[in-house]
Length: 144
Length: 144
DNA sequence: ATTTTTGCTTGGCTACATCAACCATCTAGG
DNA sequence: CCTAGATGGTTGATGTAGCCAAGCAAAAAT
Image (cartoon, rainbow over all chains, first blue to last red; front, side):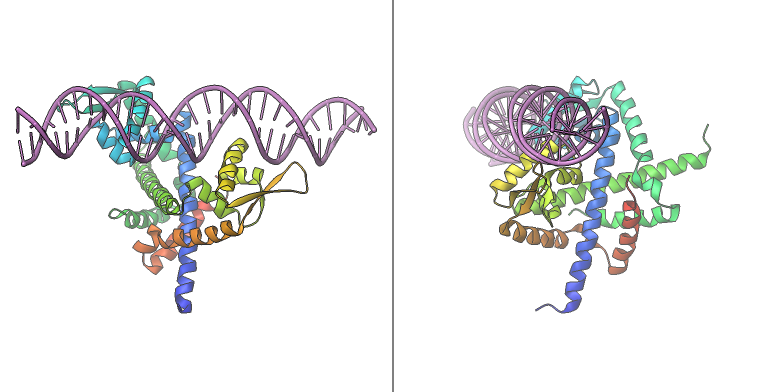
């Protein structure tokens, strides 16, 4: 049977992961609210933010970690919003998604609002933010 | 026009919120993977984890921050999985959701797996975890 | 040149999310 | 009391997003 220390560590891990999930959930909700103000769903917003440069739909699917078939409909809706346009790639199989002028403006506005209305900026002092950044980087180090 | 310091702070905030969103996204994905192994969707898992004690469907909707009508179908599916049962409340309008024995076992297993397979436990040293806990608490302090 | 792989689309199915409308019940005011 | 309003849950319509399997066109590989 495991010694007490292990059990304590497990409880600690449990607590920490619970809190991280809470923060993640709140961040997600905040993000959803902000992007909704600009008429986008969270996934659409992630796509727009990713489209700094034109990108193959395949690559976008990779970034979003979803099935490629999913991106078809996503692109349809973004195209219908006038935010994105499909342009043919050199390889004639691939379709690139590219922000329209409207889309680029939207992307800039989006980035600003997300940064400003983040829970983070409000609740932490500057040194705390720095410490958090370091820790978050460790969490993001390498793929999971 | 804003002085340089403001611009720098904005960029810093931008960066930090971007990283937080990345961590949130990864936490979400991890969570989805873990709970999928137990045959649950993320929302279903959140519900099960919340149902420590019997709870009115309304209250669950509050916790999940979604429309009440949503919980109807959610409860249907959880009931069909044999994880939850509807029991009448004292107020004859309310229906309480209560974990079945199977549901309680599932909940325990769920909590363990989520804690163990969390990115957090793997990548941080103990003091780092403590520092992170402090910062996360500040982020969770008070409603947003 | 034929086969295999790759990129996008389609169609079918499920889960969530919202909103509006509905019924039963509880609560308050007259 | 008894009606009027608020509250809890359900239903139906609609939209987004997720997966899978199947299809087609173009590239790559054999």
